[in-house]
Length: 342
Image (cartoon, rainbow, N blue to C red; front, side):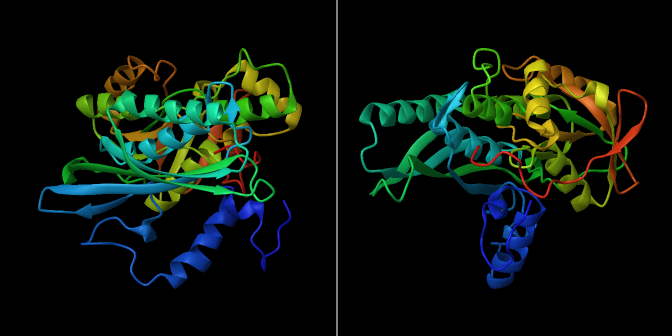
């Protein structure tokens, strides 16, 4: 994918290596203080940051913006994804999300009935985890400058330090769990955009993941977590491995992919491993209780298709054993091949 180093392009916001480079070169190099009280800060590039408030407790906070096209898609809408996306960034740090701050930039002429649907969708998503929408901001802009709306949400959770899980904690020998089928969200968006006729079968997986995290914590030890949004599981797996200076060996046969996702992926020539998910977790767990964790996740509302898909190794690469008996190197994508999905 071509891009200009002197200009900010779509590829710079798509979740792959180019975006990571922009964050490091432009943002981190120009911010003088990136953490508070020794907590996890911006420089960690984790899903959320932590602020220690005493010897035992931390505040977990994050912020996200959402520009989805179309605003309404099979399985969800921009309201559900803006709530779930931020709630999930808190959840994968091992802490229950408590609240959202919500800012909306709306184009002039936007349908009031659509706005009401979107706000109700946000509220329903928050209700699933018992989180509140506690403050917000609304702006209206000329319709020739904005197509639809953009939503920015900030989240807060409070938890014990001992429960915090970063995305950099993988250890050799850990088992790798994916909590459900991959590529559902990105392929549902593309199916809707391109009119492939899969609307009734293929739906976005957008959902809050806290229930799966809570169930897993009760029965086992989670060493690392990440929700594989932009860049898909290919990006999430490589980021986690690189941060921990480890590798992974995966079993393709165990990675759940819906037939509809495979069909749309084949038509478009897109790797489903590189496509955004909005209701899944990539999780490293201690091997001795991996089966207990898996079963606990499978009993939750959104975790029935969870699988143990591999193991953490010391080889420094993410390698997948293919169904036909070969090996494939899973590399981080340059960018998410499906723009404006989250």
